[in-house]
Image (cartoon, rainbow, N blue to C red; front, side):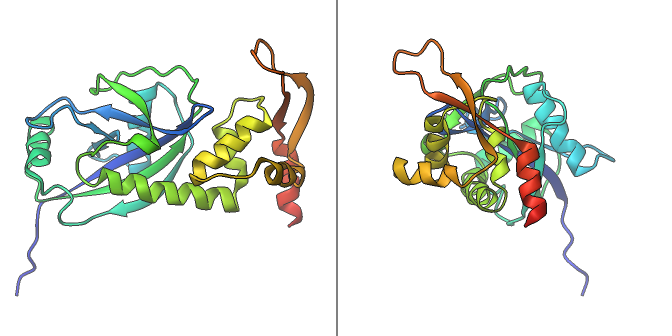
Length: 238
């Protein structure tokens, strides 16, 4: 019996995490074609161009959306359910945005971490983008809510095995309070501040500076920085 071949397209979707000193956020775009839920927020993504590598496609999407070249990316997972693009509003949007004959859409998901205070330059076809708290993500097209949920789990695993990634979300100089709030946001749970201070004391790569916050309405806190050299030395000794 002949195999039941289908028209399969490959896309990439990017989950870009940021931190606004209070909550973990995700960069979303508003799709601007189709009918029905045409203005729904979604993850930034694209079909892969002819002869384009998936890694290059992910970098292209993020450059077009942020203006940042070579934003550190990690390929996370492939989402390939036959029902990914089965909803009528999603198929209408695909037909209007790309006009392909798609029977099935497989996406390769990338995760990126971005300092939220970086100036972003959007030159993509998505004219509207916004940072949205992970706790207020709307219902999104395709399986993007599922992708965000699984990406959050992946970020938590990163922090466990590669704690250096937190520096990608923090300003160059930060307070223990900012670091504490970031951990609470990533794990979405209360973390006792006294126990957290003890945890930080075991991290030789979190270095106290002879500087304090400036221009704050409360008692100025000491500033810290992440010492990558110290962190790499610690890793090499493990």
